[in-house]
Amino acid sequence: MRKLIFFTTFIILFSCKNKNKPINIIDNNINYKKAKVFRDAKISDSAFYYFNIAKNEYLKNNDSLGVAKSLVNMAMIQTRKEDFFGGIESSLEANRYLKKDNDSTVRSTLAINYNNIAIDFNYLKNYKNAFEYFNQALKFTDNHDAKYLFYNNIGDVLINEGELELAKNYLRKAILSTDQSYYAMALNNLTKAEYLSNPSYDPVPNLLKALTIRQNENDSLGQSSSYSTIADYYYDKNKALSLKYAKMMLQKCIQNKSANDQLEALQKIIKLDPKNYLKNFSQFKELDDSLQLERNRAKNQFAFIRYDLEGKNAENEILKTAKVEDENKLLQLSIITSAIVFALIITNVWYRKRQIRLKQEKELEVKNTQLRLSKKVHDVVANGIYQVMTKIENQEHFDRDTALDELEFVYEKSRDISYDKADEEQEFSKKISELIASFNNDTVKTFTAGNNPALWETISPLVKDEVFQIIRELMVNMKKHSQASHVAFRFERTETSVEIQYKDNGIGIPGDLIYKNGLRNAESRMAAIGGAIIFDTEIEKGLKVNLSVPAS
Image (cartoon, rainbow, N blue to C red):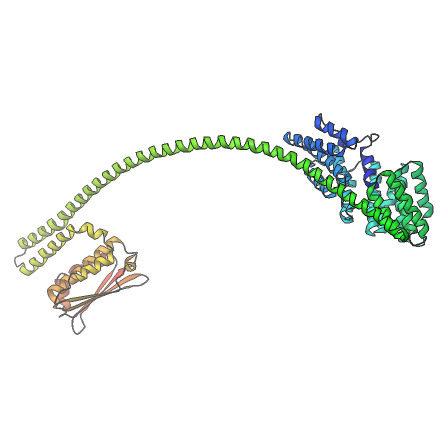
């Protein structure tokens, strides 16, 4: 008797006698008022239509309570028309707008909404969820009559779940109601729980008492519920009595225009009256098909009303959005065009300034190079020649060969100055290799090993310059004095130094003569950069020199 649960709940929550009427307390929204008129007149499709319009108007005005109440009414209409999933969907959507649960109006609306969800789940025979949501409704209701009704509904759900002892606990609370109709409903269900849990219990007196109260109160829905309970009780005990009450239930359900309850009554009759099986089953099938069509029609109608209106609103919003987007695109195009023009102007100005700056930097570089070369000419050539002149002037027995050596050294220095810029841009390992290779001819063969760019990565420019000068002095000495035909350099990198080994197959140099020729400056150069030079004169033939240069 699920219809009894719905309509009894509906009556108690919306009765004009009830002082607490939260769902009707609303502002002067015209469409909401129209919807209420149609709802009370049981014109469901029109009521649903205007509640949906009102909901959208409340959304625009950011009135969350108005939105929620409109949705709750829509959900209850869907439930009444047996669109149970649609009712659950609308109720759950309404809950999103009911946040201030300390407000009395919000609390009462939540109670109604949770009750509607519970009824939907009860119709769908999902008793676990029905129990949960009836308890939620009970939590938020402040209406005493409603509490008794919720106790009864929870008890009815627990009976269907087989939780008979727990069901009786709730029904003993429900039976305390002073309203005769609610008392009879609770008495009927409590008696049912008693005989189901205790086979020796005689429920007939209380079942008939509940039926009598309902007859006296002209409670048609309640009477059909009593007939159903009595028919179920006699099913295994007295088939004739069971069939009698099942037929009385069917007649009362037809009178009440309760199609679902008619199906329930016909199911009982089909089992109890096998002689008229075909007739009763045909009636059941016809009614069931008709009811299913009505459910589908209502479900589709509600979906169409809701989403057609939302589609029109969305279409209007799309048109408005498209217009705004067009205006924004035009504005963006203007901004982009202006930005491009501005960027071109800035780029042109920057390019001109850059060209001027590069030209000035080039001119300054040329001047600095000229100044640097002039200084080197003065320091190297002029000072070198002056030094030779001074020696000739001041030394009575100045050796002619020594003078030629020093002048040749000055010449080499002056030639280096002319190639100075190219040297600066040349990678150092290549520069060293080319220096050594420049002494290669028909009579002298030079060799290098281990000289690669990575070897010189952390070596400072000052150290590189000194190393270059020392290697050149070694090669000049080799050419003038050693009579060597093979010269070899080996380069090796350690964690702290670069090790260079020079070796030739010439006549060698006596130890006492090393510091009397062009090699005398090598040791002072190495000391200046923190390195070391060792001349090995003990080998049988040729000269071997070990150089150690700091790696950083």
